[in-house]
Length: 128
Image: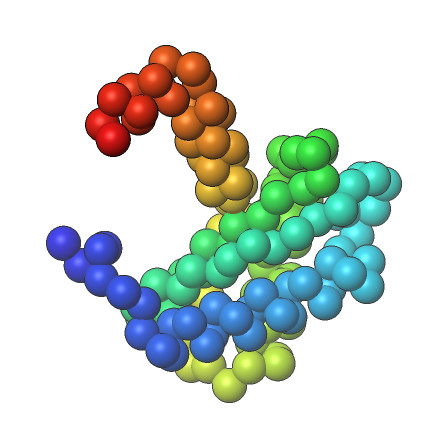
């Protein structure tokens, strides 16, 4: 049941700082595994485990192009990025990074499509 618990302030701060550091590396083109991949990468969220040993980095790319290539490139660079985070942050352990596709915007689109569906609109009018 602990999975549903809200993240602590420390988890949120560490996640935001990791996101800032990683975004800087991506923006400056310092991750060689991403060279030649022509897309814009957006880090949407970093969720850190309660013990601060693991960080899930959620991202998306422009129009979802080259998404798997970007995730693969970042995952290959994960150890290097972990060392860079350790050097910049005062943490006992540098968290292990796992890169994942952020599907939250996709889910919002699906919900909006459902709500625009004529059958759903008719059902919603019946309730009123």
